[in-house]
Image 1 (tube, rainbow, N blue to C red):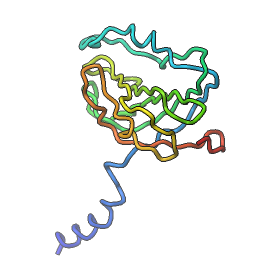
Image 2: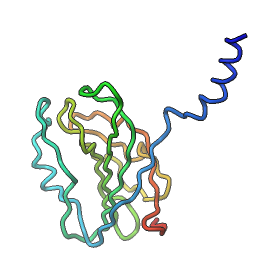
Image 3: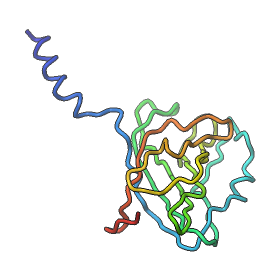
Length: 165
């Protein structure tokens, strides 16, 4: 009887937990007449130091003719240096032209300290139109070793109470 009650309770509550839920990526910065500083990004040594503690605080931008959107997603994750899941901050930076086409995109885990020493991915998709609710997998992010990004998420298009795209 107790087993049946437990099964009924779990069947009701487990779907509510949604342990594999996609994380929303929320806009926290919009830079007009900007560009991603790819020259600086290309100067990073690859493959990234496996045992190094090199970290970027942000992905650099410079003046340019594009609009650069910066998104942040926070989720719980497992790391080697903690016995408990910690908050992991994922940064997504998009360079978008006047027609709303994503010209370049990077994904970076801000406080990653496991091997490899840096988790930087670049989009391999071309002619992708920016739209609300886009899934991260549409960008087909890959790191310097050609490995795909294994994070699920979607873009939120609201910034300071306004829908931007």
